[in-house]
Length: 374
Image 1 (tube, rainbow, N blue to C red):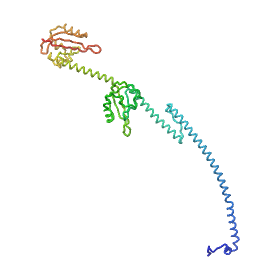
Image 2 (spheres, one colour; image 1 turned 30 degrees about the horizontal axis):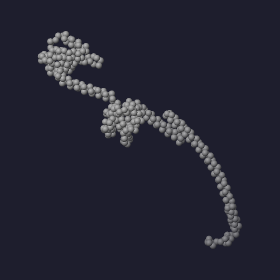
Image 3 (cartoon, rainbow, N blue to C red; image 1 turned 30 degrees about the vertical axis):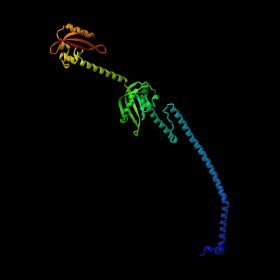
């Protein structure tokens, strides 16, 4: 067994047989030559390979660059074309052509953008048409419409409001609601608190104040606007001018009061008062009549004076002359004898007047009679 540490170059010939030495030395020499050749020619080969590689890389780089430029040009062209179409579409929309759409159907990003743009225009078109429709309704309203915010500042009014109150829209928007309310309404302010609490109010009478300080009675309905979170966004107030109705109601009230006064006066009058129709049938008698004749109101209504009160002391010509005077629209006055329920006779001074309607037709007779004794 040979020890590695004991083998030296000078012992090599002793260990190997002479017959193999030449062959082995020849192989070693050849190996040595090939290694030296590789050492000599290796760097040049590497340089050559590098040069070849650099040439290929340069060509590839140039090819990539040219391709990138071409692709960039195509993309840029598509983008510029899209922007051109988009600009034209926006310009048409600005002119009011809300049906404008982008005719791009590609499946790339630009096609997606075009589809999104068209969808946006569809939604916008619906919104604008709906808003125009609502605005048209508001403008066409004959009732006033006022929108106020949570601070009771006016944010919108319609044409009817401006017309009724004598203000321009710009003179009202941004002003507090108290500007158009009478002092009495501003002092109360209860309806606003009631509205906020209830959410809505309907047909309450309030007084609006015009620009020239005239008071206009209105029938007001209002509702609180709230967002999805329930927060109050404002109050919508719709009011109808009831000036004519108010005047009619006031006039009617005065008439009623007058009628009540007259009825009271008639009821308490000392003279007997009769109201009959054109056929002389009783429709009303006052308490003085009941006291004078002895008949109650219920007993005489629907019956004629001739059947109850004629004494038989006057001839037919007397009553015919009385009837002719009244039928001609004139007032008859005179003294004649009447008969009470108990059959007793009495003298009375009478004034009988015809009552006409608006067309001048006689519809009633009113008689005032005073008992002057037997």
